[in-house]
Amino acid sequence: MRRHAEYKVPGGKLVVVDLAIDQGQLRDVAISGDFFLEPDTALTAINMALNGQPLTASMAELAAVVARRLPDDVRMYGINADAIAVVASRSILLREAKVF
Image 1 (cartoon, rainbow, N blue to C red):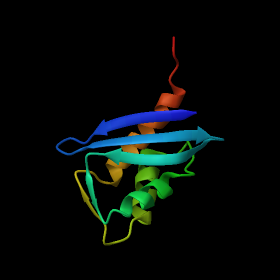
Image 2: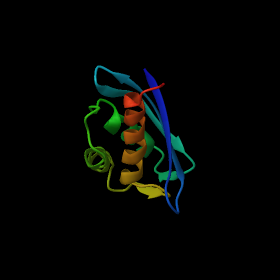
Image 3: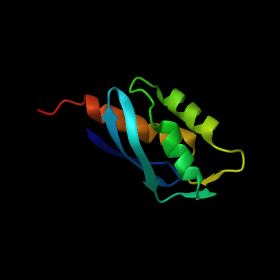
């Protein structure tokens, strides 16, 4: 099941996530948006950090796993680990929403 969510960081940039949900976990996570990262390889580290996280993970847990997996030399412009956690959490909530 594919999910898409977006989050505009107040005073910052747009963060987008596209992912799959499989067996209660986030899969095939792809973060994108109009933010900047240095080095570019940080995006792969973010995607890998979120991949495999359980649907039950809180925003704090998602932010912590992203922050832990990023090398010390990574610079984020317009976003942070909390913003990434917000957009990932939104994608999870979409799964639980009921359509009438």
